[in-house]
Amino acid sequence: MKTSGGKTGKAGFSHLTASGEARMVNVAHKPEQLRRAVATGFLRCGSATISLLLKKRSLPKGDVLTVAKIAGIQAAKSTSVLIPLCHPLALHWVEVAFEIEADGVRIEASAETTGKTGVEMEALTAVCVAALTIYDMCKAVDKSMVIEAVRLASKTKS
Image 1 (spheres, rainbow, N blue to C red):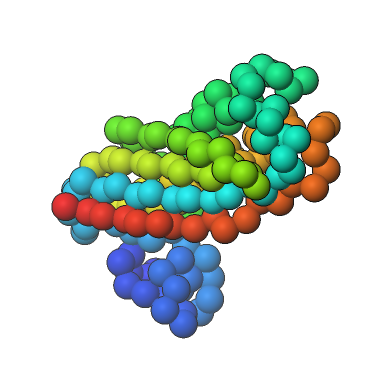
Image 2: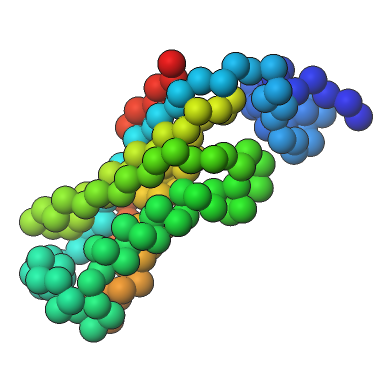
């Protein structure tokens, strides 16, 4: 069954055909534009974990935030491998930053490219994998951690 690439399919979802089949959206007709997205999330954890995070390399698995930053960047670059219908993008820039707060770690990821489709999935993936990496590296000392409030904060194109 042939479907037009840029048109919205069943119930307004771009990744579904009119009959409800999954499809990759055809972006060939879209113009190349500078695209940027910012995503945020929060990893809630205990005060003892916060104290350990503030001291680099004091957790059993090492420098948690440096490893989580690299994991988030790597994840953004691998988004199309992880999310089946995402287009592979040549990212120009990815940044992952952390802010340690009294009750957890705020995570922000930014991604940028010049292309025919946005980078919001890359920014969201970076936040999720960075949070999962922190979780993995801290789980030996904190069983109560919760990853929450992952969201797209902004996206722009010009």
